[in-house]
Image (cartoon, rainbow, N blue to C red; front, side, top):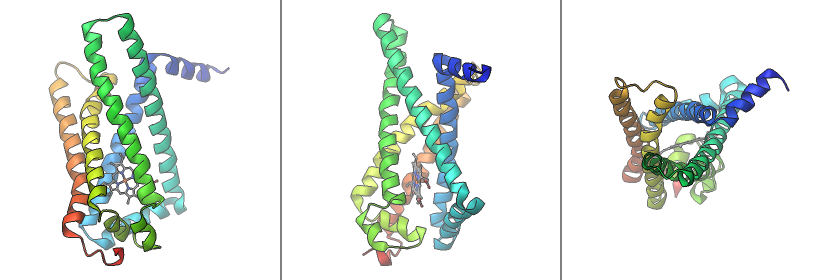
Amino acid sequence: MSASTCSLCALVKSSIGRKFIVAITGLALVLFLAGHLSGNLLIFVGPDAFNEYAEFLHTFLHGAGVWIARIGLLVCLLLHVVFTISLTRENRTARTKYAHEATVQATKSSRLMIWSGLTILAFVVYHLLHFTIRIDDNLAQLGETSPWHMVIAGFQHPVVVAFYILAMTLLCSHLSHGVSSIFQTLGLRTKKTAKPIAFFSKAYSLVIYVGFISIPIAILIFGYGCGPCH
Ligand code: HEM
């Protein structure tokens, strides 16, 4: 086995190494959310701006760009979930072995993280079925249509909107803890930086939350002339 393969094994075997992988993949997913939100907010600029953006994504690098991003995201998501589950299991075993108050406190918050994280995972699966595979009857009936119409049609039902809001609320809670954990794992949280990091994590998750929920709520309230949806 080569030296680089061995150092990869060592990284995965040590809990610090796995924490590092969770932090780096978490950072990639956090940055993806900012990019995804910025693009999605073009829906408020109008159909042309949103459709041009979608067209750019699907034709970038002759169509290869979207696949590179999809594979990168999938790898990040899998590593993030698999190593989080393994670290949570390890923490649980440690908690049974050494029933120390500090350990119990630490696992309480990580237990919340695992549940919000798994719910977000379920949301992502639903979201892909909704907009990428288009299982929604409303969307299936549309046939070949513009991405703008697809999103407008996708948020015509209050139950769908309510589900998105619920998922975004859990995402916000997950991010407000997760973003500051990234700084901690990367060794950037010190006595001096702790407060600004806590503020930044909360502000970032709030912006992501308000930004994402504004889209289904606005569509449900204003309709945006969903002509082809009915
Ligand atoms: C109201 C909020 C959101 C809207 C309107 C929205 C909209 C969309 C649209 C239109 C697509 C493109 C589907 C396609 O053409 O293939 C998409 C893809 C995607 N979205 Fe969202 N999204 C939202 C929130 C989120 C959130 C919170 C996450 C992550 C937690 C997320 C993750 C993804 C992923 C992973 C893809 C797949 C990219 C691809 O394979 O092309 N989205 N979204």
